[in-house]
Image 1: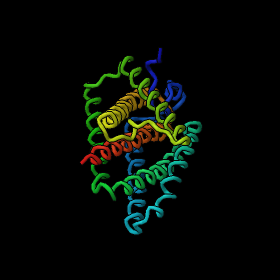
Image 2: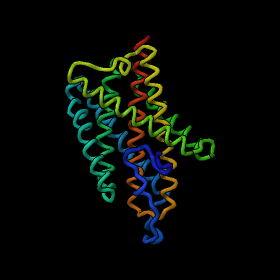
Image 3: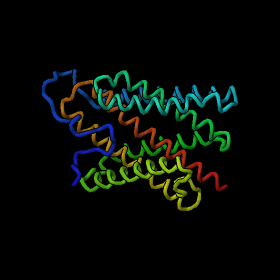
Image 4: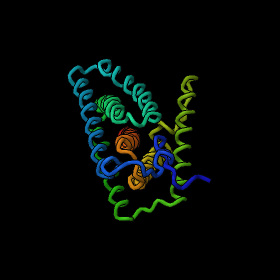
Length: 251
């Protein structure tokens, strides 16, 4: 049985949010502080994405942004691992991760924009709408994070992670799961499911941050919580981008 206090976001663990009374007023994590830092990390991500976007627009060459795309993906993974194990330096690694992930989504968006004009703004708009709607629904109490809800999201997220990992391993042997990349009904249905799952992870993140802010955690956890939320947002944007690509390829 899964612990109902866990989040399916891999950067959040229940031990990170256990109550502590050793921190005085003004040195603890707050919701407002986490929100401000989250906005800052998102802004950094967007600026980095626009940098790569403009670089591609100016050169018109995929090769000009390839180092940013792959370097950002590899570097972002490394920085994320460091942040998970060194949470107290999230104020440094968080912005670095935001820059690297900005390179990734900027590169992906720019490459797809060539074939599907306007796709990046479509995906960004959908992601923003999903985020805003879920945050509003959570704030007014229309979405309740129950044990069954949390377990469902955790199991689904693990399943998707294993599916992507297996697909990546099979690619070395020239094989793949057709439904992951296919633009047919099954492929689109799969992407819809993953987008929905990523969206539900946002709800768990909202709930986890809300509970964590009430446990007198050290102030540096605001940066760590903002970093964790950015991880989910980047995943959601990429999955929305994948879904819109499949839909527009059918036109």
